[in-house]
Amino acid sequence: QVQLVQSGAEVKKPGASVKVSCKASGSTFSDYYIHWVRQAPGQGLEYMGVLYYNADTTSRTQKFHGRLTMTRDTSTNTVYMELSSLTSDDMAVYYCAREHHGGFFDYWGQGTLVTVSS
Amino acid sequence: QTVVTQEPSLTVSPGGTVTLTCTSNTGAVTSGNCPNWFQQKPGQPPRALIYCTSNKHSWTPARFSGSLLGGKAALTLSGVQPEDEAEYFCLLYFGGADWVFGRGTKLTVL
Image 1 (cartoon, each protein chain N blue to C red):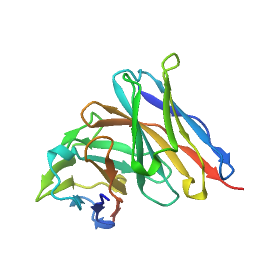
Image 2: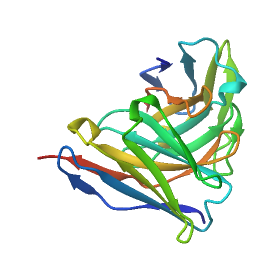
Image 3: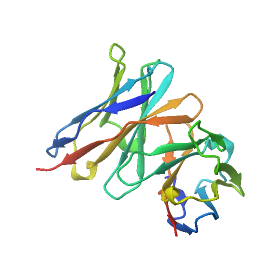
């Protein structure tokens, strides 16, 4: 059974960075795209960006240019999302989601709560 | 800025049929936007239901169906069950890394 398992909740100070991991079990990330999505408290889903796993290239929405870094570790079948220069507006649950080529989204991680507080 | 719009809320009776829609301010939604639909219940991650307009996952109940209707993406629930009460999000593709979520439809089964 495929599962995407994310790292635990984080508390960060304004201006700091956070790094969230997403590990695949029951499958590998090879041949997939891994997207990152966030959801602020009581709000909808916000698309952030994507890691094209095999090519090890990334793309992100304009809003997150310069702040969002997505990487992979093929030895552990894990992808990472790092968001820098955190503000209170970045407080949200962050999700990874897997996509087959061609827009076929299927599995999601359980989510990681990021709290930004001084 | 691309904005994707959904009905904020809908109410349906058990056993009834309801259609949720998803529109774009850039024009008609087409199969090229590869509409995906997700269901989210409180405290849970989203669950994929439909991909690229009308394709179901192995776990998607038969009562859910996706389509294009009059320039919109649509999700139809036929024979609604109490457990279908949830928030539903659509996701549209606009090229490159430009995926945009709708703001969600809160479906009440009453």
